[in-house]
Length: 266
Image 1 (cartoon, rainbow, N blue to C red):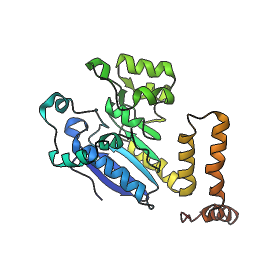
Image 2: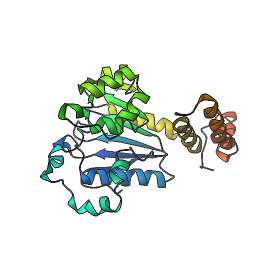
Image 3: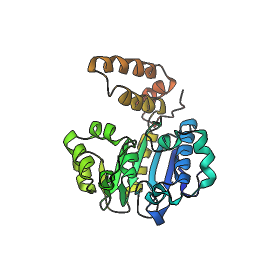
Image 4: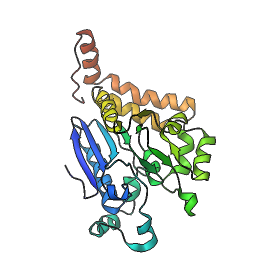
């Protein structure tokens, strides 16, 4: 299934599950993890049998951000992957969803710490579920650092500006309930249930027409910075071709025949 020593890849039906797997460090970002993430996003985009992706973490944590010991010059695990980073200097930004948007929906399943770079990766996901004890926050300013993973651009587009600026400028932690209240996440579930809920949501997505799902996701993001007039024009250009697909006809036929549709991405 691919993956690296710090990134596990599994399949749950039509869902690709990417698990940040460095629990001894609360899944702090490492070079093997970044390479594994990049390869996971690439594999999901390339495989038409994958209809959704779930991103989660092992050992009761999501991601505690960058490995600060490595940042301080004490080395980083996975030097064998250094050539990959040299060949594509943008690889880490693509892995963190800063410079890459997967065409398949991405559901985040968060338990425990989801802070600093973890909260930055979270902003690149589409739907977000968290256990009730999960913790969020952008701690960079407390350490004299800058949240350069995209947060000064994306966060205020995803939650109200006053909440975005408080999170960015205070570096304080947020509970799952507070993160849900300000709109950073969509679901709070009992601890240990985040992955199950994320897979449930992904399964519902998988039951839908894949061409329609991918077109809807693309339209939402590509029209976000447009005027309403331009956005509506773009929506028509993106949406009308979906009606001409065999899948659209199958959906209507299945509804009339009172049976589940069989979509063939055609």
